[in-house]
Structures are given as structure tokens and as C-alpha cells.
Length: 204
Image 1: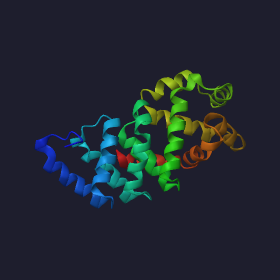
Image 2: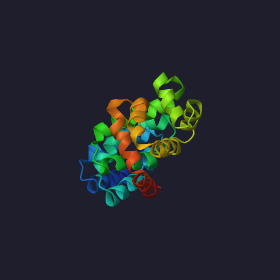
Image 3: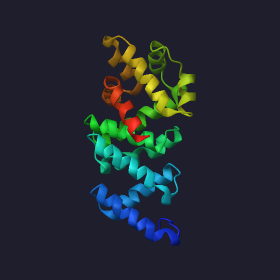
């Protein structure tokens, strides 16, 4: 009720909360509060989060990621990702992919927020950032514009462009795009773009 669930939906919501806690092996009130924050950031009615919970559970079953960690990742990134026009399903798939590749929820979310913010504000990037985009045949105006329309497709476009660059230049390009501290996370996506696409398909 404190989370503004309508009175007539409380019993149904409590049942769903207990199901989520069972599925994700979590404490009911903690998992419900976490999902509530995710729902608010992605502007999903709290009573309609079953679909997202099902998506997370499906990823949990079909990838090397845990539902609790995906929810933790979403909690840390949903503000940035919703502003950049990424659906909650795609966000869950991105998080699950990074977790599958060995990232922890904390480092994966920090890197995601930084990478998405840099591409969403591409025209404000440094000269090195602009130069790196130019090497990939991409323009900062186009990247910035498309991030606000379809962040997932834009991210895949950048990943594919980096993968097509000469191997000797890839790491340098990634460092100039997202910084030394996040280049390793981006490199994992560049190395296995098919895994991200597989999990995006699962999530949707």
C-alpha cells in the first residue's frame, strides 16, 4: 500500500511478490521494493510488472545470470537507460549478457551508465571521442539522435562498427570512446555480440 498499489489489487500483488521471491530466491519485501523502483524509472504500472518479472525469470533460466543480479543491475541503470530510450526488456537482456560474461552487477551497471551517457551526449564528447567515432565511420550527431529513439539498436551499431575495425586498433578506439575503466566491459560485448543478440531475442 505504501508503494501505491490500489487497495483492490493488494492481494493479487502480494501473491506476485511471493512468486518473485520464490523464483529469484530473495526476501519478498526487498525484491518487491527493488522491482518497484525499476517499475517507477521505466514508467511501468506497479501492478503490471509481472511481464518484466517473467522476462527476468526467463533470462535467469536460459543464461548464466541470476534473477536477483539482473534486478540489482536494473535498479542501478533504469534511470539512465529509460532516459536513453531502452525498453526494460532490452535493459534486462543487456544486464544478463554482461553478468553471463562474468561481470558483477555493480561493475556492469557502472559501465553501462557511463557508456550509455557518453553515446547519448555524443556531440558533447571530447576531441578523442569524436575522432574515435570518425574512425568507425559514425557521426556524433547521428549517434546522439538515435540513442534517444532506439538505444539498443544504436549500441549494436557501435559494437558492430568496432568489431569491423582492425584488431590492432579496437582497444584504442574503445578507450577513447568510453575511457580506460569501461573499455573492458565494452570489449566483452564487441567480442561476443551474438550473445547479446541471443539474450535480446530471449527477453523479447
